[in-house]
Every structure is written in C-alpha cells, then in structure tokens.
Image (cartoon, rainbow, N blue to C red; front, side, top):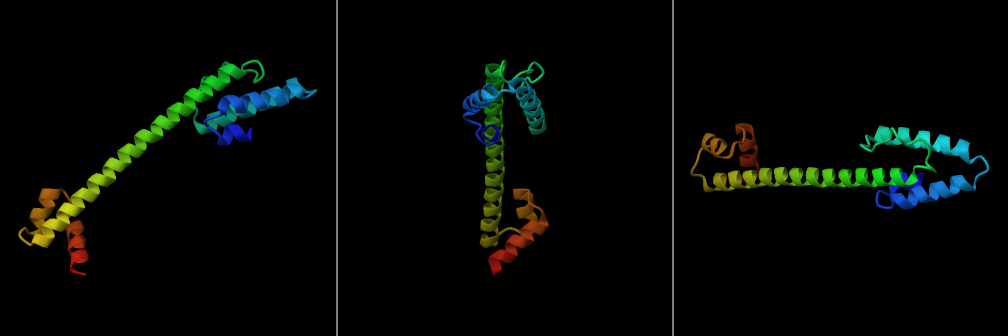
Length: 135
C-alpha cells in the first residue's frame, strides 16, 4: 500500500504486489475487502478521477484498477506540468516588467506615473523599485 501512496510510476507493480500478498493469506476475502475499501477511500480523498464505482475486489479488478490509477497519475502529471508552465510564464513576465521599470528609472527620463502607466505596475511598486536602485 505504501508503494501506491509513493510511486506514481509503478502502480501496476504495486497493485500486483498487494494482490499477491492478499492471495497468500488464508483470510484473503476479508483482507481483499478491507484493502479495497481503504484504497477507494484513499483515492477519493486524493481527488482521484478514476472510475472507482466498479471496483469491488482488488484481486478480481486489479488490471482495471491499475489502468485507472495509471490514467489518473498521468492526468495529474500533465496538470502539474501545465500549472508549472503557467506559473513560470507569470513569474517571468513579472520579472521582465520589473526589469523594464528599473531600466526606465535608471534612465531618469520618465516620471514614476509614466513608468507605472507603461508597465502596468502600481505607483507603490515603482517607488519600491526606485528605492532599491538608490541603495
């Protein structure tokens, strides 16, 4: 179960290991039921968009579960990449605007109001940048 929580890449192997352990137990039906319920709750808490309604037995539905988990993990990775890209663009844009404002302040040709209008920065931000430059 620890492998399912920590290893998003080897989900099929993690599920296979759990099923092998369950099948080796004399109380396999009871353990299968408990672990299946735990796994469904755990995945729901994580917000997994996997189809868990059909999952009734980890031993019987292991391939379907592993496929759903793999699809979900792939969606999570893609969402993370998209979020990281968006954040990177936003931070890069902000740094570029601040650098432009600093350069305009160093030139000393434009007023703070004109720089704020040209860059979209607030006058307070322009004043802070101006104070940083004068240090």
